[in-house]
Image (cartoon, rainbow, N blue to C red; front, top):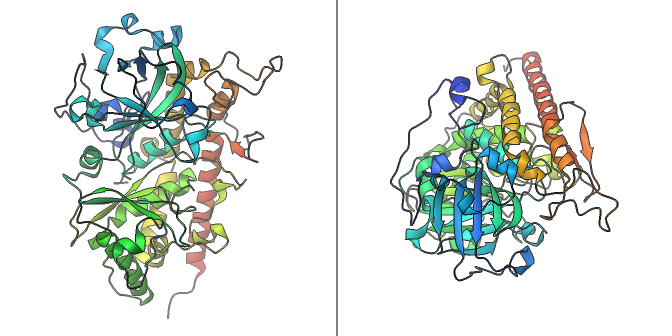
Length: 503
């Protein structure tokens, strides 16, 4: 399984699992004040719980509805510390003077705060952006830090697990780390800090020294928004695509969707070539199809749906070539709706591994997936990748075991921070508002979260009455998904064996 790579994992030596060594990386970083200077790779590390604190903040600007765009408080200071396990257990919001000065890794007064998210912007426990306008005052070269509240995720780890598996199989996705967040002595709770997709991410993860443009698949009014379908007509590339299911989020000025249109046109022409049996493909000249095939396999296993698969959005296409000669790579983003989360009671553990387009009743067109499944060599590679990922015969490359150990490692690290968001394990019906489970406005009880990540039964499910959602425990979903994919692969093999040879 040559597609596996090293990732940093607490309580699990991935070098042992994969037979590879961690890549060394030590670039020069810019800091205003810091005792310890980590690079970005070592910061985005699930083996370390971080502590982010804003001191001197305005107490009238704490709740999500009190934060405006780029809220700044004169004299406030933003700091990041390593949080030792003992200190995490002792107190909610340790003061800087209570911590070892050597554990402070960043400090600045040049920052502002915004709300983060689309649909999650109005949630009681808000997600935040910590913005650094001054390029000389940025933490590990980040223009902004994404503090994600994981408001809809009862396990508090679905996005972290999804990204870890993507990285494990060499599918580009933003890295992340866990942190405890306080505004002065007010505990805001446990957050997942998700990496910004920027030049440093592209250099570290994609291995490219520069990029020309980054496009995002988004919601749109066009019927084929985000589907990567060809659009014809006497319009410019920008007029065809900009704001109509696609958004250019970064890049040079001369790149105004011309390179993007070349990609979708190449997908369309290759679909027509695939229909003519034996014709060579040309898409791989401008697109990393191998990485996309691996994404298809991983996305099936995590049950991801709020992406190209179901909603045709939440992906980046990064062009590291030129406008005239593009070369695109797929980057998976917003991975939280996975491992069983559903807003429609759909059982994502039983999705058809080959028939992707019927998931929306046959009204959904996915030209890029259809192309992969039409070309025999690409379909074979996709199914073989699934086969390799669900294999359990070798403990060194057992992905299910890897995920279970990862779940245990993350829970051991975050459980103290999870518990401190609430004064009780269960709903307290003696209170006027028993459904207010946590003083951070988290919507789940501590016992709900613990059950999500510790339950083992393959049939276990934890229904709760919110938007008709039934969310299986993470381990249960993994077991069911692996079992279902194995059954589908076996049926595919039996069908191939019984099929008469072509005349």
